Amino acid sequence: MDCQEKLEVPVYTDVDRETFLSDIYPLRRPAVLKRVPLGPCMRAWTVSYLAQKGGDREVKVHVSPEPRMDFLHKNFVYRTLPFDKLIQKAAEEKHSDFFISEDESYYLRSLGEDVRKEPADLRKQFPELAEDFHIPQFFEPEQFFSSVFRISSPGLQLWTHYDIMDNLLAQVTGRKRVVLYSPQDALYLYLTGDKSEVLDIDTPDLQLYPEFVKASRYECILEPGDLLFIPALWFHNTLALQFGVGVNVFWRHLPLESYDKKDPYGNKDPVAATRALQSLERTLGILEELPPDYRDFYARRMVLRIQSRAYLRQPMNAVEANLDNA
Image 1 (cartoon, helix red, strand yellow):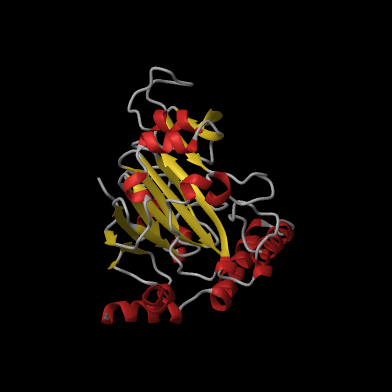
Image 2 (tube, rainbow, N blue to C red; image 1 turned 120 degrees about the horizontal axis):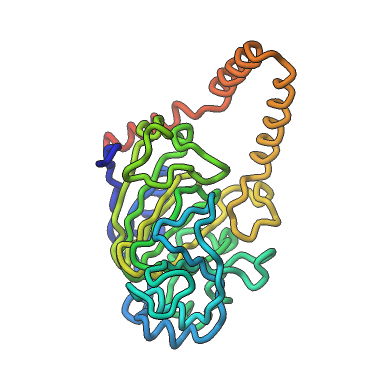
């Protein structure tokens, strides 16, 4: 039984760069973009073609005994496979050759050549496949951060998390459900770092996570060829309804110095945010010197101070008003 009302993600068709930058991007809301040209990949990327073009290059893969992967508790193992073998295994419903069980799930997130220093780039890791995929030119070339090749077994569900960069998710093959939550609902998502502790978002344990019902749930189904614009800080949870292949394209929209230079995944909090969170931990340590009732009182004062100084109010209301008048 669903615990949250499902809000639709708006859909736009035949979007070009000008329309994206003028009508969609400024709203800072997720949007499904249909009929944006993605190149020959749309007809070419069959299982056999991907296996042939990708070849026997070795890739590091998540393998899980169950389809709902949990990054917080690590219910998966990493295994290395030739790319062509991964493609074939991920497309299967049952496996005669397996690591854990015959119905194990596979997930590939492509990595850079030097995983500690280089972001993923489809053009470098899979140049022959990159020729088939045309990145929509919705941002300046110097803003480009990474293009991440993703492959999912049917039924695979990934944990709810946020990214710090803007992101276009291109669904090339297979259908995928995506559920999103606003950054302003962060208080209801029971966060550990950038990830939500609520693993089952469809039938959550409301005794453990009673506030979760307050989060507004945005949902869409991506068909092959669809793009999903996911603005930075929007939480997202994906469910592969079929074997699926896609590409995420991330780009920097903050000044370059805002980002951690030693972050090849693009998921470390901005430098200023990291400093602020570290300061908060030090402050909380100081509060521990007080008796519990004093600690509670001054913590509440701090929360009020944060609300008055940092919460975004009028700008989001203005966006809501624009949507209502659209």
